[in-house]
Amino acid sequence: MIKQISAIATCLALSFFSAAQEVDFTEYNLDNGLHVILHQDNSAPVVTVGVMYHVGAKDEEKGRTGFAHFFEHLLFEGTQNIERGEWFNIVAAHGGSNNANTTQDRTYYYETFPSNNLELGLWMESERMLHPVINQIGVDTQNEVVKEEKRTRIDNAPYGKIIYNTGITPYLFQKHPYKNSVIGTMEDLDAAQLDEFKAFFKKYYGPNNATLVVTGDFNTPETKKLIENYFGQIKARPAVTRVNIKEAPITKTIKATEYDNNIQIPAKLYVYRTPSMKDRDAYVLEMISSVLTGGKSSRLYKKMVDQEKTALQVLAFPRSQEDYGTYVVGALALGETSLATLGKSIDEEISKLRTTLISEKEYQKLQNEFENQFVNANSSMEGIAASLATYHTLYGNTNLINKEIEIYRSITREEIKDVANKYLKENQRLDLDYLPTPEKK
Image (cartoon, rainbow, N blue to C red):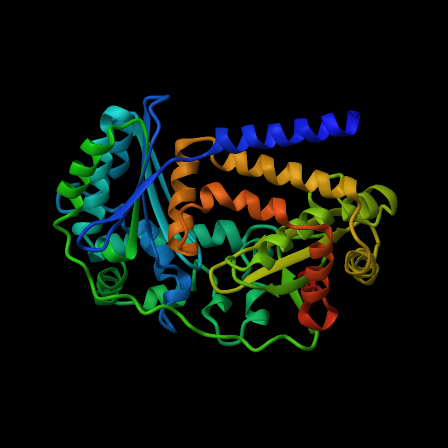
């Protein structure tokens, strides 16, 4: 009877959770191809305006890496109606905040304002799309900004080549542009001409390669009129040809060593190439990553940090992307522990995942963890805007904002074991020793 009551209570809780978290939205296309998604929520006087362009580092020409990330900076320089250097001042003066980010697959810009400044946000994003000023002084200025970012985040940051994949993806991808880093090389950016930057903008930053998202406190009919006024006159561009490059399967262990001037503690890493973010197996691999390294109760942390005391820390970076993903799992050595010892411990836990079902307790912990992540991702207007834009742009299914949690709920313990067997094989990975740079004698 107690079990039955518990089961009923769980079902009711999940039903309430699903209803409470449902994100209502309206989506449609303008005549120029701009995809619009609106989520009206008048519970707080805040609104987020975001535009996601379906262009990322993978879309760059050979010898011109870093363009997509460069534009993340360049398109804040100014427009025909916004003076150079005034973008951030305008946003701040109206009580707002803004930012942008770039991945291999897309670039996203957004502003969050008090809701009475919705029209300002729409105008600014239409200005960015319609007629930004792309000139030599802006290119030169942002070139220095990007160089400093590269030095800070990658070149001079401990384990920067792991965090930003520059010491990993060149081994996993031979043909696909995922082998290049999002930030690109300074040589490519230095060599680029102004006309090339203008051509890149013209090719990728049109309305028919973009998704406009508005979330928060607004009136939907009025907002539709504003969107038509500000974006409707922007002309569509020729359709973008998507990257369609297939990599041959990895069938033999790739053994490599990378050195880092900024570290004293070596690391052992195993890196696997994984499927597209749209593939169900990608969701299962996220759960596998959590089992192995998700917090202090994870298998590798308890074993290597708490019990064996061979690792200072365990780490994992599951990166889901549009074409392929990567899964990095590893550990930092404690004391004189050899990297071979770390590798053996990691392999033992991977082997257990491949041969034995995870416990029911671990499975319930996973379900709770992913429910919590789902709630947190959509707990703000900014979060909802980013989710809506991502699900439409990269997954082609905006309603995943409501349905994706059902995928995680439906994953079984048997499926976790099967997917571990499918992808986490020794002959399908990069075996990387990440070492301090040897001192010169």
